Length: 144
Length: 144
DNA sequence: TTAGATGCAAATAGTTTGCATTTGT
DNA sequence: ACAAATGCAAACTATTTGCATCTAA
Image 1 (cartoon, each protein chain N blue to C red):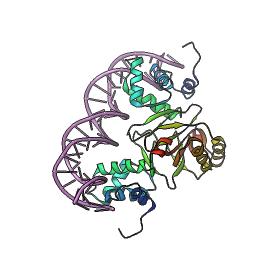
Image 2 (cartoon, each protein chain N blue to C red):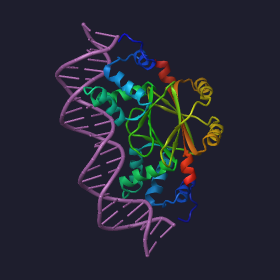
Image 3 (cartoon, chains in turn purple, red, brown, yellow):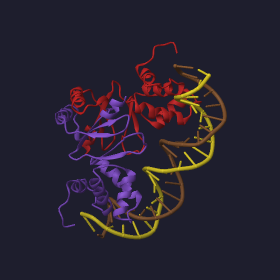
């Protein structure tokens, strides 16, 4: 492990967790996959890189990454299983079409200010956020 | 059904769905429960009101309500099962403590403006949103 | 060195399904 | 009247667990 640590790997370390092969592999799969993957896709990607990594470790890694606000499980569509979204700089924003379940991502929107205000007012320490809008995408809007 | 329809019931009708006993009961349980319930809690509340309502219908109702942006499944804590949140006026905002999983709700924050801007720019029709912040609550912050 | 993390496979539990029957409109 | 929704219970499938072993720090 002579190479520089990725920011996310560093956050694991800083929080007192070990940088294990399983965890780093899950992280890599999420990053390569664009950070918008179901657990099944992550499991698949991981075992493609290394058959020896167990399913349980993948779930444990996903839980840990969630705990650290590095990823966030969210529901897209009707499926009962979540999609994990990377929170690149601690945040993420998207629109979910409630009809075709397409996801449209968009850039930031000045939530830092709200975040700072909440921290001051409620005495909390915020590390990230997710903003989801629901509605009809252009195509479904036209079709309706 | 001579009484006035609740706004939410009306939305079901308007979308072409029937106002069945099962659906209305699920809605009522969610409303009475404060709109922050796991599927287990909803199932429990429903069968408390009417034993005859089947589990499957509850899940089907939750799916439908989600489709209509009346509720939104979200992950609190580490549990694999979602918590359903009512989107009272189409939106909801909360802070989730990543350590103790406490949920702190807060009031609006001027997202209507962003919403309008996105609608214009992306040609979509938005019906609601959910804004989640992640971080440490006051208690966990002090303890750390 | 040693607490923490892993892999395995069995156990669990939450959700979905198929279909005959009932219900809302 | 009749399409839509229901209840049932069986079938599924994703996730979790317990534990002996291994490994990162």
